[in-house]
Image (cartoon, rainbow, N blue to C red; front, side, top):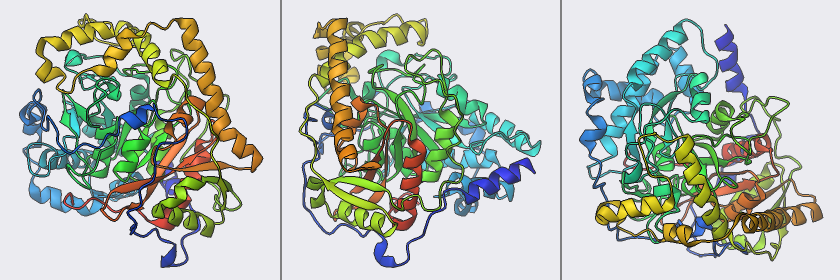
Length: 558
């Protein structure tokens, strides 16, 4: 009975006014107009340097990981799962959100064991060493099927605690999870078997299944500087299912975005410093949330910056995003930025039925060159929102890269000392660089220029604090000045265009699919709000998502 009530609440949650006519749906963009996706002051933004336009890859398939190595433990456990089983389950699982999956579980359309095997079968079928390969998954948890059986037993005994119970989740491979190495995509960490990160403990405590690890831009992209998004020495080159070797995957949570788009999992976890969730989510036509820094723990996650890093959910739908956020957020006393919440929030519970009505959003004038953006604004207006055209503040983000340099220089050794496997003796950026030189073709085919910049940066702690103060002041002013002047509730962007300002302001941002260019490349409408307004972001985005119905699953992976 308790679970039935929970499921009914899920089915009722996130209601919003539906689109009255077909005209409100976001069409395919017929325009080829290009706009500068670099906001004022973002010329040195990490998200800008991690979305370089590559066509010729030095490396495609991993030189350090084979399909056989990924599957040798799991294949015997999949022997009794056939193509016929896969086809039987497909209508109940493919492109279904978490709520629909739970409904189908209660109707005995499948067990959690079968759900898990379905995703495993798809990953093995599509992801590596074939003409459709995406290289989005690095590792599978060796005991995942037994864990799924345990979740089934809990289901039968009515011991479910959360709607994420029994849902197979992929983790970006900079998040520690027991039973699998946490590599950050680097050969130097290939034996980094460590204990669960705080957010993994959160997921497990609510019954989620840790399916495996997703590929990423190596060291969350802050490593090479002149390489494609989605490349790592461990995982190879992640490819976009909407255009393999044509469209950028976005970075650095590329494997998380790709695996969700391709239906390799119920949801995935990414991490962001400045654009690393928003970029791959928008590039792969899925939903990505960069939470307020302090809402979600970073303990046990390979860092770039203790100032700006955060983990967050990547999902196919906004409702799923709310469910995953609800499962992972919480106070962590070991995280210096973790917020000690006085009142517990439930993110997936029913919001206002008219979440967009009367809400005022700032829309930068320069973005009106983008047809998809203009169409998205029309949809918002039809749902009752007010759109205010604004001129962006002429502010810079001085020494942004140096903030990352100086943070990572101290934060990586701290992670290695506290959270890494004790058998790994590497501690510093210089240690890793020296390790890579032993076999540079396999460890760093694109070089390690960003690491060189970190190692050579001699800024001290006082200088770092001055940088942080200036950046946060500029970031907050960038959003707050127009928001106060125009009485705005939120700010509307595209993809990760304003990721750096949101990062330094420590403001949350959520991107949701808004359609495709004439060439078929996905784009996302990005909502940005004040700190700890994730519930509002989710409500606004859900209303837009339901009215626009913009997302289309990638062809060739059905």
